[in-house]
Length: 286
Image (cartoon, rainbow, N blue to C red; front, side, top):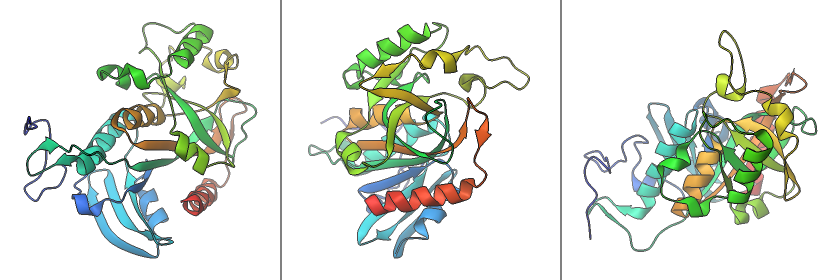
């Protein structure tokens, strides 16, 4: 069996995966993923007990128990580039033998729930609501660096490209569905299709001093209706989470608090309370 090279699988002298700085024993099978490092403690303070607290760069992990279920809360930082690091390293922790540097024959599946914030791009999705991302459409390009086209929803990709007359100067969109078992677990939320951008300003058609090349995106996506779902919100992580999760055999889902509406220009007056409400709802489902 081929050993993974030192420059491919980077682990520390005390057998911690490099970026997350985690040992295998410090990770639970149920993971809540957040972008904001400060949100980790806001979730773990609701635990009955905490076993581990690990901090390296923007990656903070708290592992403990909530209602007798072991959960890890991990901050990813912002963007699909960070999701690429986090999901690959979480998979390495459970599916690679660090001593022999070989891939385990028997694979483990993690449950990874992204709890995030987002902006609505749909008049039917008001500020201060919650959205489960049934599908993610990414124009971040990350999926195209991996040889796994089979996990993508090509019909949804083609529908999006057709209805938006997608600019070929941008990365080709890719679409991936959330895990069916987690969609079942988190029933009771509004569902939609989430767009994932590679940045916060130009890639989301925001303009300060630079003009965005994403033109009329909000008007164009109103035409898309796929399996009775509309495009509902825009954020920066879901497409990569779903693509890597499905490719590696993990269960993934994103649930977002809608802090703003790009069409009406409304913004939540109490975002902290809204996020706390979402944390409680997600923990109750776990």
